[in-house]
Image (cartoon, rainbow, N blue to C red; front, side, top):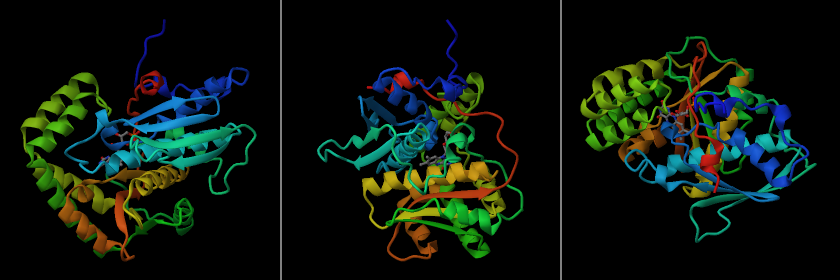
Length: 335
Ligand SMILES: Cc1cc2nc3c(=O)[nH]c(=O)nc-3n(C[C@H](O)[C@H](O)[C@H](O)COP(=O)(O)O)c2cc1C
């Protein structure tokens, strides 16, 4: 039997292996191979799925909750939204129509969405079919970006990814806004890295080898992060990468509820994939939303009053990251 390698195996999906002649459940399960390639906070992959004949249920996995960095589960819901979006894009690619019901059983907060799937359905007009190919290539890029600006036409394509009426995508190249965001990032790193509980949690996930380093390096990085306050070095690095980015972006919602957070994830994933097609790199920088007093400051940088900032990231150009981060096997996330 071939050895399972989480770094490569989940990405070895051959489109032509779609089980066309098999039973409906097996076909829907195949779509989930794309869903699990989504980004997630600390690569926690906090999702679970249950597959029926014409329906997939999408769950949040509370056992993978970042209790310190994400106490209100905002990032967890955004991450699940990213996976849901990949699922819908893959469904459309293989000819399915879909209907999503968010939180269909209010008493069950872990059931995030039910997706009804029907063969020979109509694709949605705002999901560019080219996004499908990008699912396999997308990855987070944390490098310093080139100074090169992003052309207006490409920014417009990214803007068009946000079609939900109550969700807002703001992108800016304004230097003053960048400087203010930079100050917040520096404060955020100082607060988080001086908190042993934050360092322990981050160290744990790094130690799982989920952030792309080989096993030994992951374990060494876990020890370093857990036992040393690296806030100064981290702040310097984050400041440099933030200021290098030609564009800073924020996705906000009109209502601060779970459904909106899932939709924010869906928009973010479409932006990531549309950016990937155009060679634009994406890097979420979440610390400024993880600390309540800084989050209030972020709101002031968004040129729309009374919205809740949910996710912040930077965009720009640089060579692609060589490695992909690993994923858990699909079998592990099926219930
Ligand atoms: C909601 C959310 C928040 C994230 N926050 C950060 C962050 O603050 N800093 C960072 O470097 N990456 C962040 N990421 C990126 C994840 O670390 C990344 O998606 C994960 O490690 C998987 O790697 P990949 O995106 O290359 O597949 C975030 C991703 C999501 C979905």
